[in-house]
Length: 280
Ligand code: ATR
Image (cartoon, rainbow, N blue to C red; front, side, top):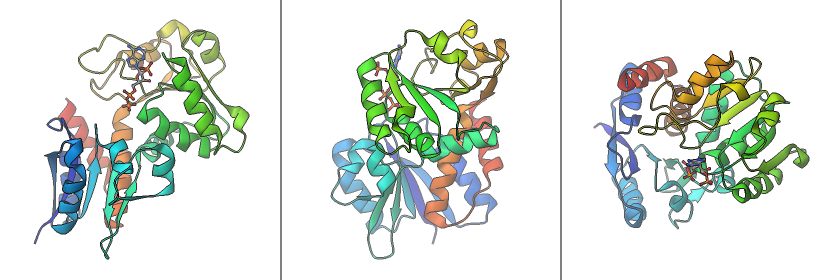
């Protein structure tokens, strides 16, 4: 019998995860199917327990369920998900245990690695202080980056920097601040990562910064993947900077989830191709 996997969220209609994972299952000859389910936060626990009872192979969680999942009695979060404060991957154990992981940070790390962007010792500016910024900042700090978090609401950036500092080897390497003085900050930076919603469909003409603040030695990674080429990535190209697409993070967070569920290395190139085709 086919084993079912799924993503829970609300809204969920535009999720690219079913296409990406079904392509992987099919290429590997696995008798599995991945489906999107609309689940409201107040029904999340019932839905997860129901999936476990029905023998689901694993789950992804997306907006607005990731933070809520951490607080459910039925889920035991792994230490990284606990620190990040959000669960995006649920693994069902053999004896009924349900574990919550967060693969978003790992996805970002793999995306940078594929683009040959150095993390250890690099000066990385993370724009935004929401859930995605948390996952990325914790991961990159653990990999030895020097991180400045910048955010419209400066206090959120300072707060996140404080949380991340607690796990970093050298806590002075993590700072939080507002958006002013961005040009000077970027002059001295190696990588800029946008985790804000700026540039995301339908507000495609917005960006955290423009070409005059960027430079050719910078790598610019926008985790927004719809549209494929965001305003920020266009500005980065105009400045001669290296660009890293958000599609890579989407694919690698999915690939990490796939590995947690199945123990099998998924075909990431095929997953990437599938996502790119769906976004064309
Ligand atoms: P997620 O959990 O997906 O990261 P979020 O928690 O809603 O999403 O965070 C969105 C981020 O985009 C925040 O850092 C937000 O800044 P504030 O903390 O000041 O709200 C940022 N953001 C959203 N719209 C923005 C805008 N117009 N200008 C600058 N930053 C913006």
